[in-house]
Image (cartoon, rainbow, N blue to C red; front, side, top):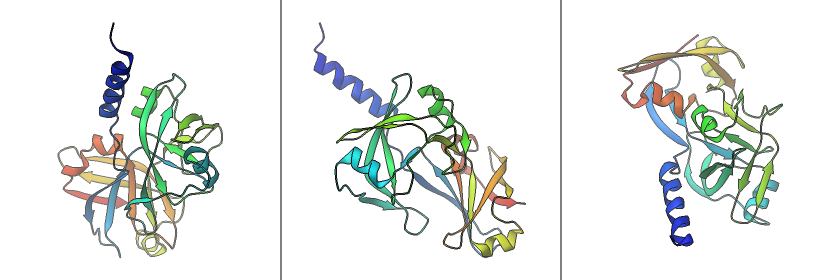
Length: 225
């Protein structure tokens, strides 16, 4: 009979290989697009945002996020902290990275592919909109968090400074199109505009969308009203 510890080690290794911890933001082609600022398109891999209270449940009293690397938006970063996610089928995705800084809500962002594997019917939502969303269990080194809601697929969106909104002739919560030219060219509709004077122009799409258009091979990218 196989050794139980050896079996557990093999399963853990297989899971780690299947769900390697992904970089939460991958900077892709920058196209000036005629606006006041360069157009940056980033692929956002699965990740978690946490409240301070929940961070302490997962990592212990007084826990703080520690920076692994800066993200494109000033003040935002990928932390060194990762958690394991357990879904309704008791399936596991290990090593989901937490992004900082802490927020006033805890949220898990997955792709539709992740949702199918986990058995979670993911709603398409803007960040922070958790009404009638499913939950999950997050497991950290100190404890487990039974998240009652907040698991979503993030609606693709573009962060815009007011100067960018003026250039493109749009306002907060409008929708635009993202046209990607190349070997796997595609145009994504319903790109939500999120206006904020503190941000730089940046598009976020998820891994399913980035893979579908093979973003790395893009020859031209533009936002269209």
